[in-house]
Image 1 (cartoon, protein in one colour):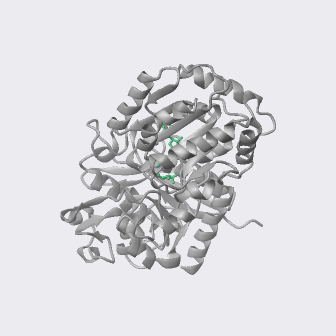
Image 2 (image 1 turned 60 degrees about the vertical axis):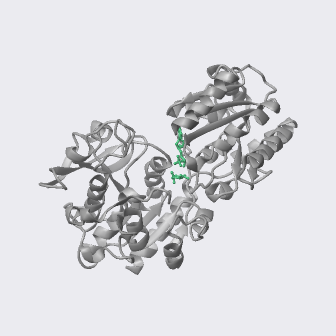
Image 3 (image 1 turned 180 degrees about the horizontal axis):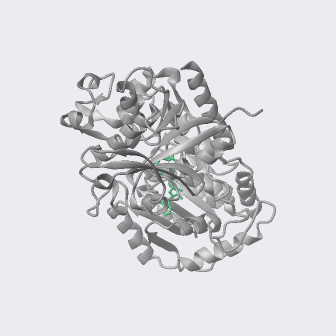
Length: 476
Ligand code: ADP
Ligand code: GLC
């Protein structure tokens, strides 16, 4: 007899394919399916944004709340895209289109403190059995937006269920004024350095890091980096203190969505055994970006948020050298306006050699992964990184800095090119090395093939999460 699946409540502010700004959505969208194979039944609590209610609006209400931080709310339970969801329908907090965190002026919504405290408070309530007939054995919260879950669980009465907090990015910390305490229903007694206080503010990320039963991050190397002063962003002391209650579990990608043999978004299918279709994908991407249809030129690609973390300034600084190698570049990205501008100008200056699309385009991301020879990821820090995993899966050679999850997933000279000096010169050296490898087509193809042979699925990581959940439930 197979044992009953372990019910786990996940809490996240974004989930693919409904709402996505970055890798968190990919993880939240793919992990439940992989965990199902490990005997874990995940239900995911998400804010009832318009995109969520569009698919779940007619779902069954399972709880009504008269007043959730300034307005009525209800919980809807239903299925979408194979995910078991609980949507927090609270129009005063979430009935806003577009980016889940930013208003039309590009700034954080002024009530984000309330919006994500509400999500966390609900998660804790569900964890304690607020929904009739549903009692999770563990609550798994992601990033600062769900960080207060651990605080609400801790202060909500005796014997809360165990919790896991996963930090996907230590740079986003969610700090808000202490004056909000009574509004958020948090006790002043918890406002202390070993509670949810952080430098005189309410720390949402801090609450998760401090109060969750166990903290994970998304790669073993990042788990070590954040214990150091250089990588800890002010939390290294706390993270060292957490000892064995902090661990790194590498992300995977959804290998059904990212499958070059069946991907409907790319020009032609291909596989490690039959790479013929890749030439068509390459030609299609050159054409799409108006590049010269040159079969000999090394074609680099970038798919990224344009943010400080990703350090694409290094690439902007090294563009002349890239061109001097006879290479081409396509870039898809959005973020910091100054950087968007810099790459747009480079494309204007070098038509036929550099192509740039500013914006967010899921289909084009697939086409770039399938069509370019090498993908550049020069991040300053990278908790895990998913684009290099997609590159491996599509036989594209990742060129990455040796940080975080990039260091854990790309093997220098075997599946990709890894560089140590996080400077324009360091990147220049890596581009040159990539060009040298490319000059011997057989060697370069071997890198791509080796990458395609790596397991980038959720299979192994999901087993690690399942083992962790079980250990925490048993110890509880
Ligand atoms: P982060 O979460 O820090 O942005 P990750 O590499 O973990 O970095 O995940 C980024 C995800 O977002 C990947 O799925 C990537 O393909 C996607 N992505 C990033 N920028 C774009 C873009 N401009 N258009 C389409 N997809 C993008
Ligand atoms: C964050 C990190 C990225 C990671 C993603 C999913 O956005 O920047 O490195 O892959 O979360 O865990």
